[in-house]
Image (cartoon, rainbow, N blue to C red; front, side, top):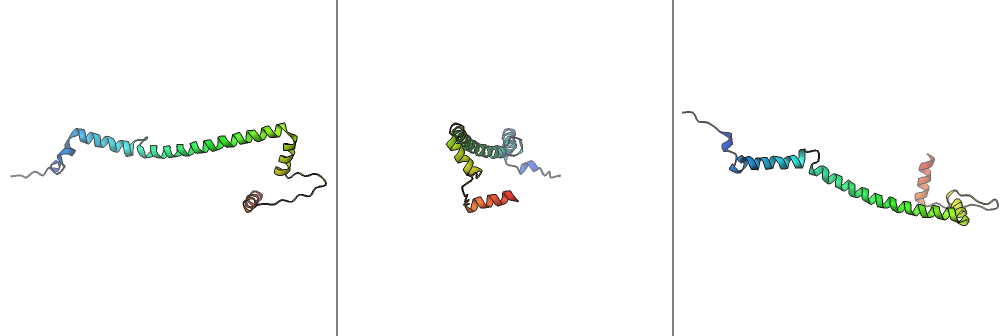
Length: 113
């Protein structure tokens, strides 16, 4: 008398059903193995949210810069003010004193290296 040892006897009956097995394999495939798996999609959605926030920031900056450019093109007083502040221009009989905050000083130090 030969006793056969069958591995399928140890597997619960619900997992021997071909439909349940197919569904389990499908979910493992979708969750982990596919190129568009859920983990990758989650990371991409987070990146998309970050890019949307950055986009709003840059749109705001572009609008501010357009407004400044319009002011510079239309008013000579604003143009002189801009040149004095940004490029440290002065009239011949003036003295110029530059006061930097610590963060501005660090930026200038990094640029000069």
